[in-house]
Image 1: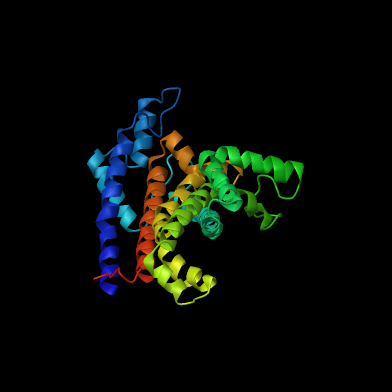
Image 2 (image 1 turned 90 degrees about the horizontal axis):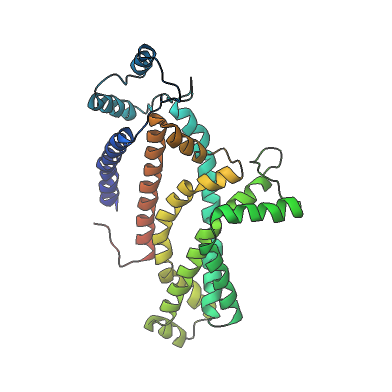
Length: 308
């Protein structure tokens, strides 16, 4: 296991190098720029601006400078927000996005697995049909539709939860609606994955053997069925977590959550190169680490998997 972890951690270096390189040059090839305006900037002023941001150098020289700064943890200044460093946006917004995404993922996994178990054990009964109908709705209806509906019902009509706020005076109640909106799709996918996987495991020979030994049904489900049935769910958790963090852009906009999603969208619109690059690097690291954790958990769930 230790050798496997060392290899995986070392593999992050070339992976991130490729991501940074491709992102840097692809962004610069896009039309427009961070200093483009409706009115043309005088050449001498534009020259001074480019020089102050070291953008007067050849593109490859800019790349080497940026790569050297990233290695020291410096993502540079924002090109569109004066006196703001990219690291400021990340340090302020990333904990919020990670908190929202973590809560949403925990809810999705817990409820999705629970609903999948009930649906599989009550196959072709009303519990199964009801659960899968909800799952189809969760997969089909996008977050920008679910969010406003939840706001309308629970905030405006019933007044149970705050509308468009983030932890402040309303406390933990402000997390409920954005977390529910963000987790709905992933809950639906996990519920369907769990149901299909549990049904497959229930038909296995070793489950028949366990039942033939006289084990209680609860023991069979908890000890034998879930351990094998959760493998597809664990596989899905890596991209799901990164998807929740990246996909929180819509939810953060709807509920006015001060995460990293909205600055990322604005950076893309404004061609704020350094802010875009900083966000891409952060999202890439989150995805790589999430997949690493999934691989480790896989080994504990399936004894057939060995890391050598």
